[in-house]
Amino acid sequence: MAKSVTLKNISKAFMNDRGEKSYAVSGVNLEIGEGEFVTLLGPSGCGKTTTLRMIAGFEDITEGHIYFGNEAVDQIPPNRRDCTMVFQSYALFPHLNVFDNIAYGLKIKKMGKSEMISKIESVLDIMNLQDYRDRMPNQLSGGQQQRVALARALVMEPGVLLFDEPLSNLDAKLRLVMRDEIRRIQQQIGITAVYVTHDQSEAMSMSDKVIVMNKGKIEQVGTPMEIYQRPKSKFVADFIGTANFLEGTVKGTEDGRLLVETASGVLRIRRDGFKAGDRVTVVIRPEAVTLAKGTSHQGIVQKSVFMGQTQEYEVLFEGQMFQITEHNPIQEKVYSVGSSVSLQFAEDALHVI
Ligand SMILES: Nc1ncnc2c1ncn2[C@@H]1O[C@H](COP(=O)(O)OP(=O)(O)OP(=O)(O)O)[C@@H](O)[C@H]1O
Image (cartoon, rainbow, N blue to C red; front, side):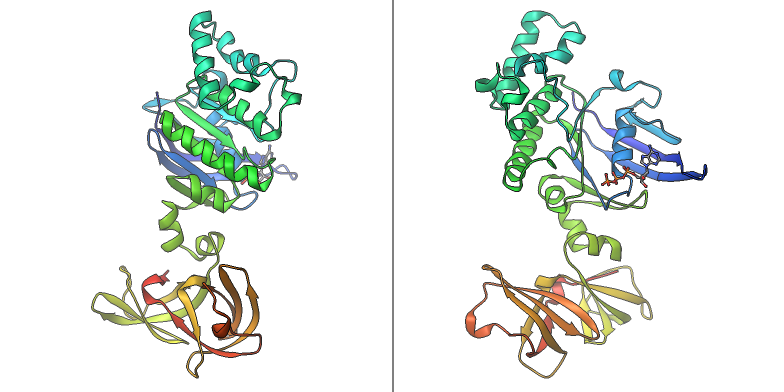
């Protein structure tokens, strides 16, 4: 049965080369609901894998506690925790065929033969692996091996399923297929899943919640849309997608909107929690800008690239390079390098931090 996972003030210290304590993860609090799919996302070295390994029990916790449901699991060894991990390397047994790889964990559990066969048949069906049941791992493609690894984890019916960058060894096209497949199966079974990746499109497309980490701490937890549209920090805004920033000062409010004075004039932005005089940063996504000919808010086009569905620009504006994306470009309305342009912001798409 799916279990919730709670991390209470979790820290992990390693000894660095100079023999000093160095924190890979510090003060992490997190609640993952039953049946939720969450992704730990962040740059290399931010502590994602260490956090996942602490949940699995492969890494001791320096401080804090981990609960599955109401049960503290910190002192429970990995093989007795109600979770299974799917690894990047698949970690299949090379001398066992697909069926026996999947059966392995159930045999260790000493499950009765008929129950075992029925469970294995059911995951072979779910994972579309029936045709490969007698093959050895070296007779399978990377994607098929990863499906077997997932089947082997699912057959254990764990309360929590953990994924450590499971798709990074697959080619780009197969990653897209597998990400849909993992999400479909996770929803079909209703299992709690914690997934580590540094690929933001993977995180955005699969997760109920994304947990953005930086330097061992959580920067933000939110739905993919929340973290994209309402990032809490410049770090999150920059890490998730592309962001342009304009510094400004709050002048007051009007009709429930903040009036923010910037080098580009006063912007009216829907946002609570700020008062007149606050120094703020306006987050401007590339698709929230349109270009026009004109004299106000002048910028100079430095790069103009046709990408099919979009025209991608880099525009030097207020001493910064702005990234701008225009959808459905029309030849006559495309600006070439060197053009003077004015920037118009879709105020409803702007955000203030
Ligand atoms: N066994 C260890 N001994 C010492 N330091 C470690 C150990 N394992 C991890 N670290 C350090 O802890 C920090 C976090 O590492 P972690 O592997 O959790 O990062 P990550 O976010 O998963 O990165 P990546 O995306 O590169 O896998 C890093 O600075 C790393 O060097």
